[in-house]
Image (cartoon, rainbow, N blue to C red; front, side, top):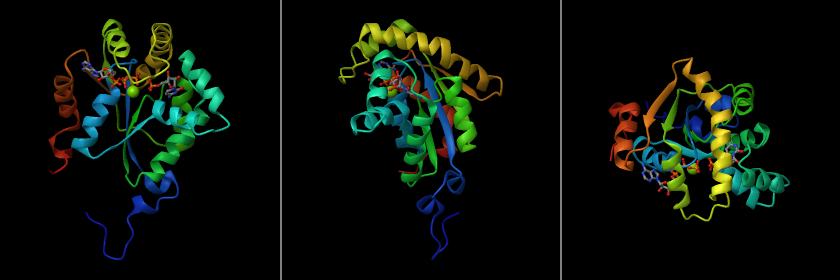
Amino acid sequence: MGTAVGAVDNKETARSLADLNPSVVFVLGGPGSGKGTQCANIVKHFGYTHLSAGDLLRAERNSGSENGTMISNMIKEGQIVPAVVTIKLLERAMLESGNDKFLIDGFPRNEENRAAFEDVTKIVPSFVLYFDCSEEEMERRLLSRNQGREDDNVETIRKRFKVFLESTKKVLEYYNAQGKVRKIDAGRPIEEVFQSVKGIFGPKNEKAD
Ligand SMILES: Nc1ncnc2c1ncn2[C@@H]1O[C@H](COP(=O)(O)OP(=O)(O)OP(=O)(O)O)[C@@H](O)[C@H]1O
Ligand SMILES: Nc1ccn([C@@H]2O[C@H](COP(=O)(O)O)[C@@H](O)[C@H]2O)c(=O)n1
Ligand SMILES: [Mg+2]
């Protein structure tokens, strides 16, 4: 249903997440599994706003924020920044977006992220998209990404794999127990992976051209 004439769309005036009442899909997968690549396709076809926690943290680091040095050190070591910092960035980005449908990419990365997000925002994700890919393939992709990321070197990549196995997998288990994980074989070519993604979001949610 459209917004009535004279009324103001809730999405444009939302001052809090409770006002916005957003629909959220968490997008998880190992480093280099293709989360960002697939999110860009989902945005085009399904009208979501893509929020990458890593991108938000890198922007915050570069902004001269008081947390800049801490964020920079955590990223260099492949460690997870405290949830309070990341959640503030996500909240602000959601409220500024003018949308109410979000792909939250690379979050929650550990149990602390997950529990704090639930606690602070009261948002329950619609589902969790999980891009499953072998370490060999992810490492190959990251080493040829060429975006100048300081964590795309063999030493940090291995640390990021370890954090994924030791922390993010627990988050996946938590949501799997609730029947919310949609697992996709992400080791295939980009277009094939997207065909599977489309099957999850469904033709009824596709944007008109
Ligand atoms: N299915 C695919 N096959 C081959 N290359 C891919 C595929 N998906 C993504 N790539 C490439 O692999 C690299 C990593 O992809 P992307 O940045 O989307 O991963 P990511 O999961 O967001 O990684 P990170 O967690 O490090 O942010 C990019 O150079 C991208 O072009
Ligand atoms: N929830 C998160 C997400 C990311 N980070 C830090 O950013 C790095 C890069 O993340 P990408 O998703 O862009 O690969 C990641 O290794 C962490 O250092 C975080 O702390 N918390
Ligand atoms: Mg990414």
